Amino acid sequence: MRLLLVLLALGANAQTRETNPYALTDRDALATGRKLYSFYCVFCHGMDGASGRGAQLASPYRKHGSSDREVYRSIADGVPGTEMTGHPLEEDEVWKILLFVRQIEQNALGRGQGCRADASGGDPVKGAAVFQNACRNCNSAASRLGPDLAAIGATRSREHLRESMRMSQI
Image (cartoon, rainbow, N blue to C red; front, side, top):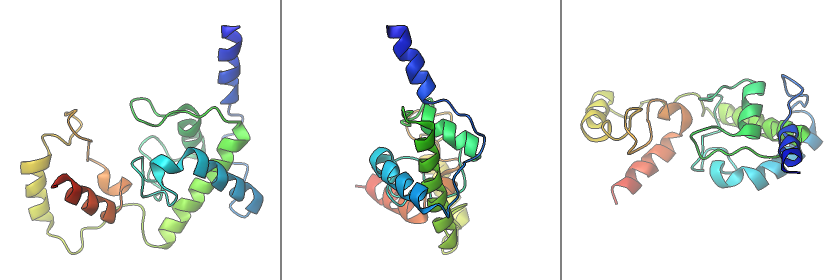
């Protein structure tokens, strides 16, 4: 009986396609993807894909792969070593969530967000010195005290970073 349950759970995450069978023009699939996202994903990623504690989805950058196949696997199976757990959803449901995530990406790019935060208005030399002296020891791949910030500009908005720095000074 236990083996049957495990096999059923594994079968629920089966992926039969390499690319999303739904297009952004498919309003019904997009609406369903939005509903599923708001149930399964919003608590960590925010409805805008940029305001939660999870990876920023309002960007085409994906640390664990950005192809349809790779993002599908992240949604279905989760990402080991992170808070991202897999979801026992039907294949069709995962594709619809991914469709909604692609819309979030597209909307962010249309607003000039996404890819990388620029350094306009700041002093990169002073910023680098502050990071080296105050942040690097805890916020690097070699440390377990804080998150690795190597790609933080690609995964978090400027506003999120400012707010995080303000909160860490309280």
